[in-house]
Length: 288
Image (cartoon, rainbow, N blue to C red; front, side):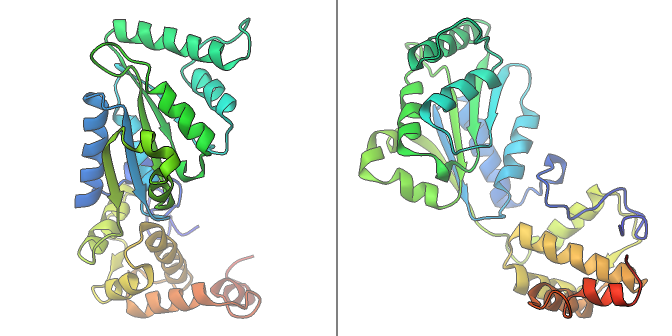
């Protein structure tokens, strides 16, 4: 809606996990390096955790976009799966033909093992990445542990990346999952951005969206952004998106502390009919 007003190619603060918008803060760079290391060194299990909105899914998409043809990937977003469904989805993601085979665990695992063995002979690696892994059942996690047994005498045929909220760490530390937890050799936890990162994060997203200085964030705006977001990238996006909409409605090209404060108040408003910016703007005829 406001992109043309600020001469942007697209919305810089969309919540979709577009890998080109990944901001490599120190910790995001470290997390990405942990992932690449775990894959290249064939460590078997890799776990990345972080709070809601810290950029885990965007990081995952960026990782997969950097994988070349030597790495076969299976990306799983639906973590509410049974162990049988997990095996079926992994085979489907690797484009393994399932027609004509009996739908049993053994057949699925045999088909997967045959694919991984041929993949290894071709000099390739294979990665399964599961997002929102904190929702996986114990049966599914145990099945993943069993899949990690698919290996040669010297290395793992399958690298399994679990990406999830902090609850995933608690889940893996339960006694019933001790055998799986002990196999995880690569781990990283993503925290919120630091105060110093926030201006760079906002500037990065604006640059990717094609900003040519038709929009500016005043220095006094970032303190308020930090206070509201606590350094959480998703909350920064939500706040900045609202601030740009308010600036657009007021025909402004600078986001200062006052605009951010108004955006914060709008987001905190509970009366959606009378209190929000959208309602006020509609009454003024700015939007229909």
